[in-house]
Image (cartoon, rainbow, N blue to C red; front, side):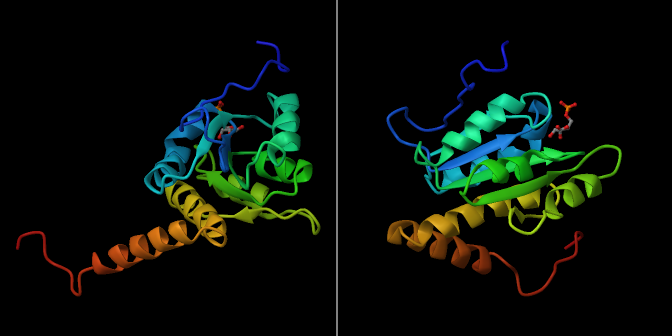
Length: 179
Ligand code: RP5
């Protein structure tokens, strides 16, 4: 496929709803991690899209995606990558939208390479860096929801309820497996 071919859109909402959050990842292999961000955004009914965009293998696709993101109505971009994880940083270089970086756990270095690649941005080009792996993906989506909730009172209420239910679900004391 030509690198300049139209983006392979995988919008999870109805086509007539403009996505507010873009979830991009460097490879199909990142989906196992990034699906946790997708699940949270779906749970909160936040219109979003999921795409494979590689900083190294499809650099023109990344440039096109990031440069047009704000104009298409996106408010936040979640970018997950592993290893030499340049996707979030290069995305942030092309857009003023907030970019949340998720370090995917790599086989060779357990995601430490991903984390350090994403977190050590030069001053002037910020990337909000989350934890390695599924927790990072989940929290990136919750952070995106928090950002959107600043101007969406219904979403703010849903977030408050979600957090209250999470708190209520935590037991006071542990139980033994044999009990
Ligand atoms: C990165 O290289 C991707 O984000 C992925 O985490 C890693 C490995 O990619 P594959 O070789 O599995 O496609 O660009």
